[in-house]
Amino acid sequence: MQLEKYKIQSHNEDVLAGHQRKLAYTLSEVENAENIIQKLVDFQIAIPSWALGTGGTRFGRFSGGGEPRSLEEKIEDVGLLHSLNQASGAISLHIPWDIPQNAQAIKVLAAQHGLKFDAVNSNTFQDQANQEYSYKFGSLQNVNKAIRKQAIDHNIEVIKQGIELGSESLTVWLSDGSCFPGQLNFRKAYQNTLESLEEIYAALPDNWKLFLEYKCAEPNFYSTTVGDWGQSYSYVKKLGDKAFTLVDLGHHLPNANIEQIVSLLLMEGKLGGFHFNDSKYGDDDLTAGALKPYQLFLIFNELVEGMDARGMNHATDLGWMIDASHNVKDPLEDLLQSVEAIMTAYAQALSVDKKALEIAQEENDVVRCQEILQDAFRTDVRALVAEARLRAGGALNPIALYRNLKIRENLIQERGLKAVSTGL
Ligand code: PSV
Ligand code: MN
Ligand code: MN
Image (cartoon, rainbow, N blue to C red; front, side, top):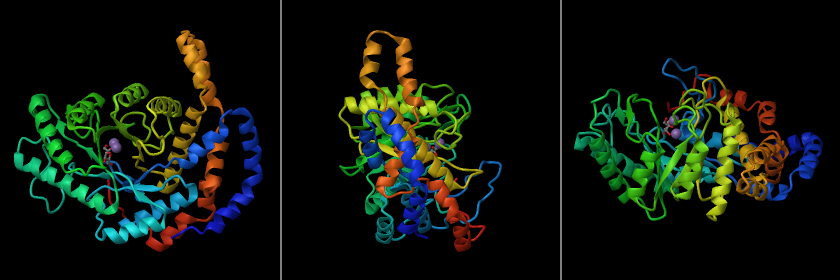
């Protein structure tokens, strides 16, 4: 299903007057509004192929209707999102949940929807049907060399598939770790993991990046071999210039200061990218900005500050991806909300009066520092985000249009009520 341009235009005409009223006010309030709008137009956030179907928990899965049944249909869904918001111009694949049988045809289809392939993800946290060895006791860390080799080979295969699709990065997330004290020799597990990662790194093309994601717990609940930013940093530092740490917002111990982690990794030149989501308890994978929009803003504040200090291009120099899973919402609506929240936080961070903040920091004027940040956070920049969408050819109100056009109902008609997509 493809969304015709005239439908977006007619929706925009219907709601234009209201938008222009809000925009005029915001333009009068925000000093560098034009610059912010342009940066928003340039900014794209990759959609994970595994978030397009209704997610489940280990207690059950309540599938929604019209879910994509194939990689082609996943690409179509991301294409729909992108035509609505013009900010979701890339898809991140998870292999073998996604199996690109005919890479050339898949590439052509994606291009027809204006999509690129973002990081490809390997999967050594589940056993696949025709797999020789089990990952029950870990993959790259495993005490058994043959199991490590199987996991290394899988990652190299994922790189090969990614090359065919035009992807330029590999994200490695390991569930490796242990559930009980004494189960694992930490030093040996680290060493095995490092050696395995070195072999994978050696297979990376020159223009590729390797992102090493960390996670404090789950599915192992005593130790995780890449458990926090420090451990990821220690590996990527040893691997080389093409290896970076990936921050998934849901992978920290409670109350971790993620914005400070981001700032430090950026400063060290080792921040690679993001998996955006929100959480209250753990790796909840809820809609970005649904619970802690201030945290999301503070993270973007550090990103903008740190990237500008290093002369980095906001749109291209880090990998921006969503990693979420929706148990109760329509996944497409939820992804539209996530993208909107990320864009809003980015716009707010761009509107911070940086010079004033720097002066206040130099003068230890703590009250002023808070005023400056919260002033930006509490200024309503949604009209700027909508204006960026309008200028890029998207819809002023993507969710309203999605509902008015009955897109989900159409997908159900096309794919059926009981379609089941792959992924967790
Ligand atoms: C693990 O919790 C994770 O965040 C990794 O990024 C995986 O690839 C993804 O979730 C799987 O859903
Ligand atoms: Mn993740
Ligand atoms: Mn996760």
